[in-house]
Image 1 (tube, rainbow, N blue to C red):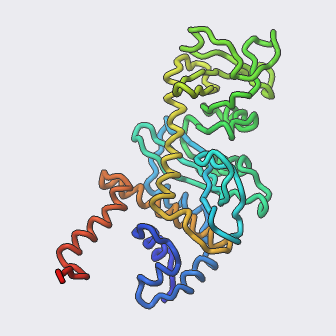
Image 2: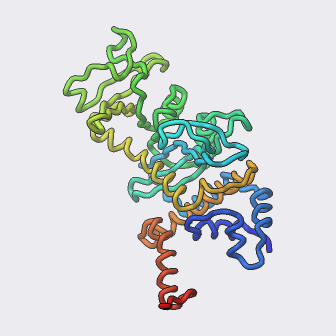
Length: 336
């Protein structure tokens, strides 16, 4: 029996913990685990498949947002997997060993629903591309695909002069946090640039934001900066090219939609086995990650149709099994 994309994705969808090739073969009559290995080795699943499947259910909006970020598929206890490298993980707040995945998500605020549309694997030793290179590539593809959106959201890693200038010149609004040491000027050139965390704020500026010049941008290119208190020990500095924005709470709300991509990363890891492929070949890892994201898209659509969460759908399979075993037990209990 041959392993197929349908079979492999179905396995990722229903398996609860174990996502190995051997486990799949053990649960399909007539399937050998070598067949699963060969499938992952020779198949060529690409990011284009994600777009082809996502566009079937994608609902675009003039108020739509695009969000790009990256996550690390943890391989800390894996050995000799091609493409694994030490890289920074926001969740771990430090370096971890794994495969970097740069993702591109579309959010429709009118429906409060999001879709993954594209992704790239961060593998500079193989292709020489940075994470920013991948995002620029995905943005260009989004333009070719006539993606409709108003706002782009990103974290401070992607808040480069080039990225913000590109989005501004394309007529898009962006919101992103700035690192506390980013150099800015709020004096219209009367004083030197200083770290954003060193700026002084009036009460009015705290409520309405202030115009700043970020070092490295073109002359007379100003942005609106907001200081937002997230918690007692955390302050964020949010910048936007929407100079009409005059409400700190509204700016924080716009920027907070970025967390939809964090939710997507969490769901993909916890529900599709994205991190759990132990195959050593780079192509096998690429195929597994693409299959995992296809499964996420399927979960996303089913959750919308059933008005359940993805977690309820996944864990519901265990509930159905428990009910079946209580009615018709495979193993009968008896008192000795």
